[in-house]
Length: 260
Figure (tube, rainbow, N blue to C red):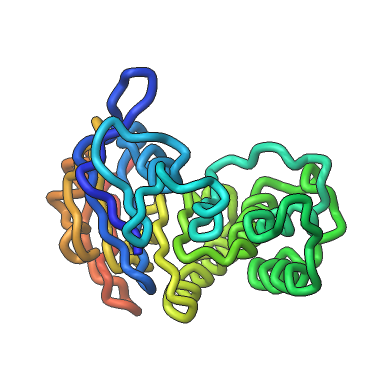
């Protein structure tokens, strides 16, 4: 579904991502972790076709994303950005309905089916009760959930999430990642998630990529292959212990420090 091959990318002449590779099939979840400045968001922007690479390829169902028309790309791929931009004069319902724009004819009006898709997406993300409020009136966490509803309303085949839990409390962190997991499995979406919380990343991932400062890949593979004490301690430069999660058995990182 999504294939990234030997990607090098940056901005203003500064390369921040080097020789990045990733394969994500339909129904799979890939998570990208690493410290600030390791190129995580740059990788996601290249996948979305918003930033061009210096070299390498990003293929969406075999087609290069930078050669696709924006409308066609938006029909097949949706991005939940890290920060909300614009839309402050729109209601939540209007914001979510924007997700149908790539599927409408020029100056087309939303159909009853479009309205129903928006309603379902708001219900999935717990934002249906907000639909009459203005986007500017929402908290950061509420905006994040509304933007996810907009992305789901696009009905994409690939869903890219950039720090989706950053403004959410524990309940909504769990619900959002549970929804991403459910969509991957039941709707056969290919999902890529950038996360700072390494334990959340390990909990939902089929594939993980650990980036180090400077944009090179320190490790990639299954959570068991990536979440090792040697890998994480070297990249994050803090002592970490890896233990099995008591419920899932997946690797779980525990910081080994004492302030006393």
